[in-house]
Image (cartoon, rainbow, N blue to C red; front, side, top):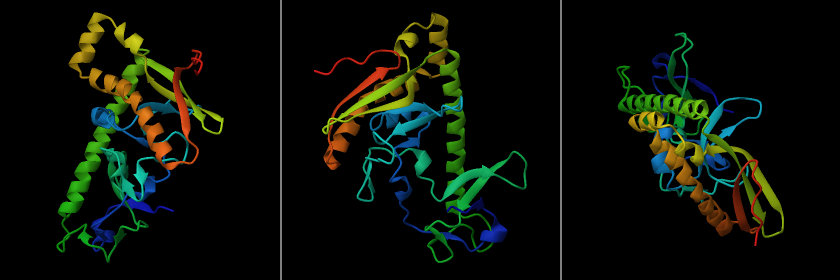
Length: 255
């Protein structure tokens, strides 16, 4: 159980971080948050999609790491194997949280129960004179960038929604056992609607750099084939086929 608290000099003067930290916490995660600013780089490794809880109107931007819950195909033998790592998973044991002493203000927080935190570790969070260490300063800057990227991603998704550019997808997975699985609740950009945007809207999107994440997201769907390859390298039950179909359209028959 995590014990996440705001970083405070008064309480954490002697707290230190392990020099070597791992990302074993993602071992069982089949999706992870990814920011729109990371789409271009991440699209070379992962399918990037939006997901939505049926009970909520809010979309989340994620990279797919597996074809089913609990399956992370990019974390094998305690190693991250993808070409890039989304910033959201590299901040452990730190995160952003609400400052209890300042209303509506975010602050750096730390998980005191993390195996990478303790007074017997290597890297000081505060110097002997009480000043923030370079380690903590770098963490705060990274958390600030992460927050800014999350805000930008929310605005990007809002643009897609307001311009009716989203479409829901189904992933139909066929297994060597004859079993078929269907993944639903994932969304991407409707390329036909993007191509139909009015000229003034195209110019507006171009000037604001929105086509980079749009086409990165669309191009990333080809990485579903990469997930199949990785799955078949490690699993006894092989994937024999995957079809990506917009919801409402009939899947083509398998040959």
